[in-house]
Amino acid sequence: MTNNVNEFDSIDVVNSDRNHVWHHLTQHKAFEKSDPMVIVNGKGLRVWDAKGNEYLDAVSGAVWTVNVGYGRTEIADAVRDQLVKMNYFAQTAGNVPAAQFAQKLIEKMPGMSRVYYSNSGSEANEKAFKIVRQIAHKKYGGKKTKILYRDRDYHGTTIGTLSATGQFERKNQYGPFVPDFVEVPHCCEYRAQDEADKENYGIWAADQIEKVILAEGPETVGAICLEPITAGGGVIEAPAGYWPRVQEICKKYDVLIHIDEVVCGLGRTGQWFGYQHYNIQPDIVTMAKGVASGYAAISCTVTTEAVFDAFKEDEDPRMGYFRDISTFGGCTAGPAAALVNMQIIEDENLLDNVNTQGAYLISQLNRLKEKHDIIGDVRGKGLFAGFEMVKDRTTKEPVDESVVMAVAGHCMANGVIIGRTNRSFKEFNNTICLAPALIITKEEIDIVVNAIDEALLAVTSSL
Ligand code: PLP
Image (cartoon, rainbow, N blue to C red; front, top):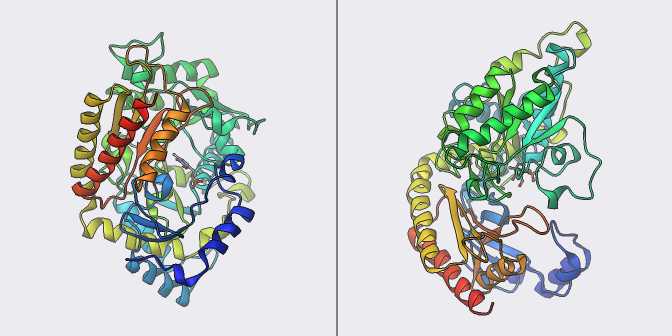
């Protein structure tokens, strides 16, 4: 595979990018002085930029998306064939790939029943919030409108989903937010709250949810929205005991469980969905990134039949349905890509690969922890891993963000793209994140881990 730089003038493209593209999550004052990276080609886990530089991408398109890897011609062919046949019709009617993908998806999600299509993780979560709100009005006289979310979780970029987000850096300066979204404490054991019961942290953290429900009034709380493993907030898996207790509490107070699988969905953690590790029966599940691995925009809000049923009737006949539409939820490219994406995961036994290579990746990160005092905690599940960097293992004081950037920059200069998570401007901007395509090999993991090892050596020796 080589870079097709001949198709365009790479200097022109880089200049057009520098002068006219407003990049996402980018501080342009610093960016403008740098040399913009314009990605041109991809194959497997590798991408090439406009200058012909090759990188091994250990975060699947920077934000944990390209689960089956780059350059999948079988997905591109299926999307092309579908677009030529029928590109679009609003989801007020059916289309063939949407029906077929819904069937296949539900087969992977026992207990779930209905698939609502839209285009992004944020949109899928907005639909979920609207479902909860409408049920509150239909069934509970407008009372159960409150939606709980967790500190450090992220649920999207719209004002509604930011209202349900526990990350200062994403939220600050975008308020005022939507009322009736209420935060509950995080469940990061390494950063357990001072007052926490450290012996039974999972139960303690779940019990904080009950405290919030009781303080708010159970008759006002309609749902809780949770990431199965907190992604951008620091790769946080809930400690033992947490999930069964959460389920128990939600049942007790008639609170719907909405699991946000936008990152973990479609195999990333070694099960089809992250929640499936924890024996949870959700009422609503949302997913986006890995659904079509970025080959087309698609997201899904999946519900139980009971949730769906609640929309069939209303005292006011005009209200007896989910009064929501997503124009581009009717694009056929998304489900056409998702069908082949799912087939690839099955045909290539990628869930097995995630479990095998994921265990190897985490063991290698733990090996680095033994070598580098700057690593305070290694976390993750399947091919979703991260480690916190600290100034001192005893105090757990996070390193400055510049150190994390230096480690990521060193890896990039050596041809490996790694990610970093965020929480706020000052604290906890200290986690390196890895989420490679599910096809990664042991040899490729070694390349990633060696690059991190070298970066840590270089950066710590200059501190
Ligand atoms: N939910 C989670 C857990 C996410 O990590 C993200 C994006 O990173 C979203 C929702 C929002 O998805 P999107 O950027 O597709 O709107």
